[in-house]
Image (cartoon, rainbow, N blue to C red; front, side, top):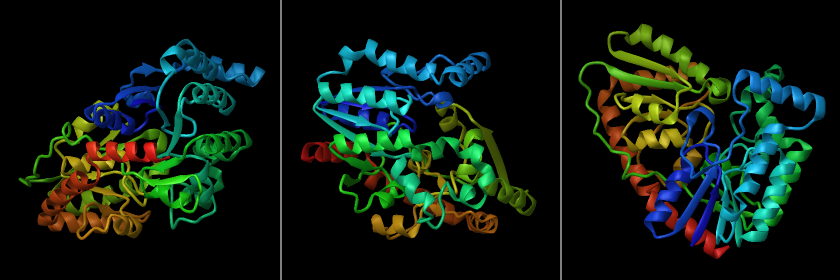
Length: 378
């Protein structure tokens, strides 16, 4: 099969591509690399307005004319490479806003893609109209929208997410759902909002390239090392403030037993190297399931504080703990960290369980086969 993957912001499409190629398929990945994370793509689709001055020009022009010059640049780049975007058996979008242009330009792009390729699929693995609607209705016990639902003054922090509910993005959502062959979710946070949706094909777990990610059994010799990688643009949405407060308490309580390292908005390739030496990794608070960074850390055998709710455990029919579930509660985070620090044998046990879970449920070759099966059936 010839497969076109559009967009990347977690390494999901890269790992899927590696699995598909290993199975003998031809794959092209296009996208913008997701800013500072700089994920690899075959063809880069990005605008040029990243510096302070260029950003001001872009924003100023939009205010004067309502023209998003960055989006037009991206769209025009898709026209320049159009010959390379033809004749695919499957096209899969990473998100409803897959090329990061305005909704109207996304639709123009997709109309062309639909005409010159066979099948179109959508991944729900990040913020989109459906999960936003579900979160805003307060149907989750907690979600990344919980801070905003509790405090509307946080609007500026949530403008990006909230736009998926406006008229233009709703039209984009409807267009994709009505013209694609179906929607696939990558974890419980996107699976649950899609249940009973007629376009939903089911959950396929995130693919993790276990051949590239080496598992090193943990050893505790001296201090227990805790790593907290912060994306400064998503502090409130990821719940990093709960981790920060908890770490202050942990440092006072166990200063002679722990070593804490915090980083801020570093590129993906640096990030995965920096946490190599840690025992415990703090991922995110507002989730029912693990995000991509958490899964890669688990593949390395790290003990990850993340989303691992009952719905997740039930879906995978888990018989033992593979990750540490955390909630938006500083005391709860302190409690689970204290339990690990005081019981280091638990860290070693969880490390083995985490790697075993990734090998069983997230092996990139097995996941690629599941995608092929869904694509062929639909």
